[in-house]
Image (cartoon, rainbow, N blue to C red; front, side):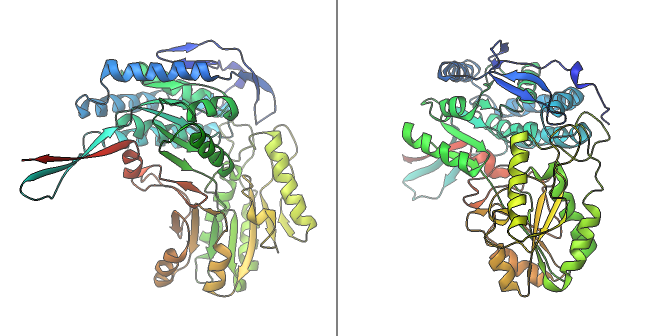
Length: 487
């Protein structure tokens, strides 16, 4: 159980972590605490030379340690020790992350950090469980498909779940025998540095994990365009993903995994458990103040039950306690920055001006920090930016339908296909509609990821390429070659 703490008592590891040490660097980007807006630290920006130093360090670490060629069980054991240390240092990690991010400290120890340790253990077990394959050929030949690590993997993670997203990248890349150069968001970098420091303490070879800080335009481009980085993994917006694809194409060709934006529907039929549906939908859009790529921000509800669902959601929307992230009692998160809060406000105000009905919220919250009230908008036009754009905030739009076909038409977003929710007691309908929904993840009578790490996540359409989590994430960090031996 995490406890409240004084944010001014925390010392932050400002610098780049390369090899086995933190390199001092001049802060360039001002960092403000989302909970109260106070300037508390600065983030340095790694240029191409420093990124190259990190890459060369990673290459040397791979060669000196033979990390990709040692007995696979040794990788498993080392990663399991690392996961144990992450759990042991959960309170320190939680305090680093809570100050800079939108994640309340009470959610971090038992939630994000415990899950990250689980994920690393999950991927560690793949190291000596997944194998190459003999394939059928004629009697005169022996055919094999051989699996190998890529070498140095580049990773870029977002600000909304910093430690969790770092775990998504680090776990499978390292288990698969690679080294990694990772850039966390310039708004939330410190827990990733501490993860790298813990890896050294756990006995992982120095230089396998290198953390470079900076923005996308400078540091991100240096990573994605580096000729010695063999594969890229990115989680973030679709716009940023497109820019990464462009930079990779401009500087060469390499595989990439992109988990991008979403505008996910939650579809409620009249035969659903309405109280459960309302509770799940409200919890999802208020969790982390809606700042999640899979946020179910489009409520599609059968016409006959729309007033009932709206009343239930409205009653539940403000039950979570807002407060600073370093207060253990806080349940509702701030928005990451004043700029992001202004974007949310602008989209909501425009929707209301265009005729949408604001049933609750629709305003910035009073007091310190960048808080925005949970918001439910009804009578929203299908072409409204509130429906079409990824708001990344606690804003839920409500539209109604009268048939399955109409529900599917509303659910089908022209750009995104990351996730979808479906609430119904009719099993035949659930199976039928999961086949029609254009989304990489579909939840039925629930919404949100569980601790079943075997389930991959990734999107259709412009919501991404490839998968994170699951066996697919491990395999995405291995390359294969075909071998045919004449006998």
